Image (cartoon, rainbow, N blue to C red; front, side, top):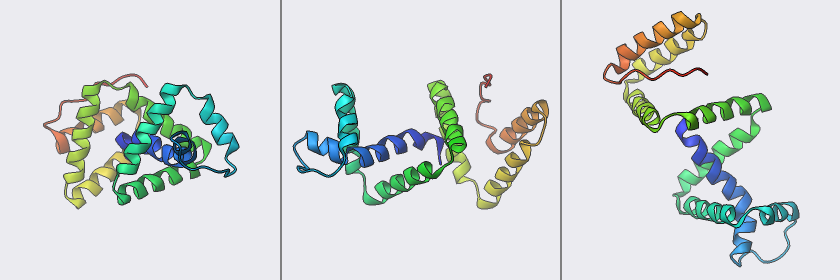
Length: 164
């Protein structure tokens, strides 16, 4: 899953799943009992500002084309099927993304766009080379990573490396 889509995916799909009952009920729709007492209780404990934010995001989700909603829903289902360890990895990557400077996120988005535009054979080769980096010692891995950046994305400035 693309790192930049994770927060949007989670927020929108959670909203689709969670807010169908409470958000609509809070707006005067979906009258009648449907066995979601815990969900409604949770909804009532949220501060009004959070409820409004979730309603707003739910409306954004509802305004998406059906194929995008389906893709978000599938990603959410995939996330829910992850083991706790895999979820923790995803959350750690998401937090790393959130902690990045906005210009670093923009740079990374640009690099990803360039990656997506590489010919299939080059993209596959780059993936394989990055997989092999995992087996290298730290210093060698960083040296090889810089070589790959120069080979495939030479016009991009080098990333600022922070301690992880």
